[in-house]
Image (tube, rainbow, N blue to C red; front, side, top):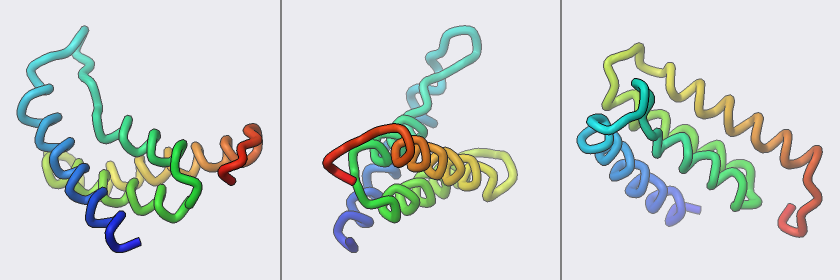
Length: 99
Protein backbone atom coordinates (compact mmCIF):
# COMPACT_ATOMS: atom_id res chain seq x y z
CA UNK A 1 0.00 0.00 0.00
CA UNK A 2 2.84 2.39 0.80
CA UNK A 3 4.52 1.70 -2.53
CA UNK A 4 1.31 2.31 -4.45
CA UNK A 5 0.79 5.56 -2.57
CA UNK A 6 4.31 6.73 -3.38
CA UNK A 7 3.92 5.77 -7.04
CA UNK A 8 0.56 7.57 -7.26
CA UNK A 9 2.08 10.67 -5.64
CA UNK A 10 4.89 10.74 -8.19
CA UNK A 11 2.53 10.14 -11.10
CA UNK A 12 0.06 12.81 -9.98
CA UNK A 13 2.88 15.28 -9.38
CA UNK A 14 4.08 14.92 -12.96
CA UNK A 15 0.52 14.99 -14.32
CA UNK A 16 -0.12 18.25 -12.44
CA UNK A 17 3.11 19.77 -13.74
CA UNK A 18 2.29 18.72 -17.28
CA UNK A 19 -1.24 20.05 -17.00
CA UNK A 20 -0.21 23.42 -15.57
CA UNK A 21 2.91 24.10 -17.58
CA UNK A 22 2.23 22.61 -21.01
CA UNK A 23 -1.42 21.75 -21.52
CA UNK A 24 -2.62 25.11 -20.23
CA UNK A 25 -1.80 26.64 -23.59
CA UNK A 26 -3.92 24.18 -25.56
CA UNK A 27 -7.67 24.04 -25.37
CA UNK A 28 -10.85 24.11 -27.37
CA UNK A 29 -13.29 26.88 -26.56
CA UNK A 30 -11.61 27.67 -23.26
CA UNK A 31 -11.72 24.08 -22.02
CA UNK A 32 -8.54 22.14 -21.52
CA UNK A 33 -7.66 18.53 -20.87
CA UNK A 34 -7.67 17.69 -17.16
CA UNK A 35 -5.18 14.88 -16.63
CA UNK A 36 -5.70 14.69 -12.87
CA UNK A 37 -9.42 14.09 -13.23
CA UNK A 38 -8.85 11.44 -15.88
CA UNK A 39 -6.23 9.75 -13.70
CA UNK A 40 -8.49 9.62 -10.65
CA UNK A 41 -11.41 8.20 -12.63
CA UNK A 42 -9.23 5.54 -14.26
CA UNK A 43 -7.68 4.49 -10.95
CA UNK A 44 -11.14 4.19 -9.39
CA UNK A 45 -12.34 2.10 -12.31
CA UNK A 46 -9.41 -0.28 -12.62
CA UNK A 47 -8.26 -0.84 -9.03
CA UNK A 48 -10.65 -2.91 -6.91
CA UNK A 49 -9.65 -1.32 -3.59
CA UNK A 50 -11.89 1.73 -2.95
CA UNK A 51 -9.50 3.12 -0.32
CA UNK A 52 -6.78 3.30 -2.96
CA UNK A 53 -9.15 5.25 -5.19
CA UNK A 54 -9.95 7.70 -2.40
CA UNK A 55 -6.27 8.07 -1.62
CA UNK A 56 -5.52 8.79 -5.26
CA UNK A 57 -8.28 11.43 -5.25
CA UNK A 58 -6.74 13.05 -2.16
CA UNK A 59 -3.28 13.09 -3.71
CA UNK A 60 -4.51 14.36 -7.08
CA UNK A 61 -6.66 17.04 -5.47
CA UNK A 62 -3.77 18.14 -3.28
CA UNK A 63 -1.47 18.65 -6.25
CA UNK A 64 -4.24 20.34 -8.21
CA UNK A 65 -4.78 22.75 -5.29
CA UNK A 66 -1.06 23.41 -4.90
CA UNK A 67 -0.73 24.48 -8.53
CA UNK A 68 -4.00 26.47 -8.73
CA UNK A 69 -4.96 29.90 -7.46
CA UNK A 70 -8.33 28.94 -5.99
CA UNK A 71 -9.29 28.10 -2.42
CA UNK A 72 -7.12 25.34 -1.00
CA UNK A 73 -9.13 22.14 -0.56
CA UNK A 74 -11.70 22.84 -3.26
CA UNK A 75 -10.28 20.40 -5.79
CA UNK A 76 -9.70 17.77 -3.12
CA UNK A 77 -13.41 17.82 -2.35
CA UNK A 78 -14.31 17.64 -6.03
CA UNK A 79 -12.04 14.68 -6.76
CA UNK A 80 -13.07 12.78 -3.62
CA UNK A 81 -16.72 13.33 -4.55
CA UNK A 82 -16.05 12.00 -8.03
CA UNK A 83 -14.24 8.99 -6.55
CA UNK A 84 -17.21 8.26 -4.29
CA UNK A 85 -19.62 8.60 -7.22
CA UNK A 86 -17.56 6.30 -9.45
CA UNK A 87 -17.30 3.68 -6.70
CA UNK A 88 -21.03 3.81 -5.95
CA UNK A 89 -22.02 3.51 -9.60
CA UNK A 90 -19.49 0.76 -10.20
CA UNK A 91 -20.62 -1.21 -7.14
CA UNK A 92 -24.33 -0.84 -7.86
CA UNK A 93 -24.58 -1.23 -11.63
CA UNK A 94 -21.53 -3.18 -12.80
CA UNK A 95 -20.86 -6.83 -12.12
CA UNK A 96 -17.13 -7.34 -12.16
CA UNK A 97 -14.90 -10.18 -11.01
CA UNK A 98 -12.57 -7.57 -9.53
CA UNK A 99 -14.95 -6.48 -6.75
